[in-house]
Image (tube, rainbow, N blue to C red; front, side, top):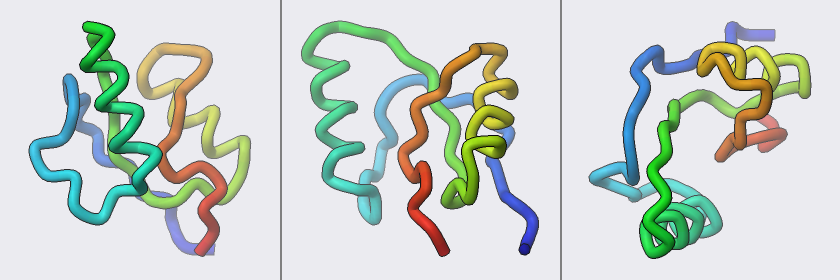
Length: 74
C-alpha cells in the first residue's frame, strides 16, 4: 500500500476552488456557511481504512473528523 498523504495545512472555511470535489462535500460547505458555522478542514488522499481516518482526526486534536473522501477507495 502506498503512503497516505495529508496536507498539514489547516484551512478555515470553504475552498476557493471546489473543482474536483464531490457534490456532497460542496453542499456541506454551502450548508455550514448558510448556518453561520465556522469550521476547520484538512485536505487528504482517499482514506483506505477507519484507522487512517481516526489518525486524520488526531491531527486536528479532535476525536471525530468528517472526511470528504472516507473510504473512497483507490
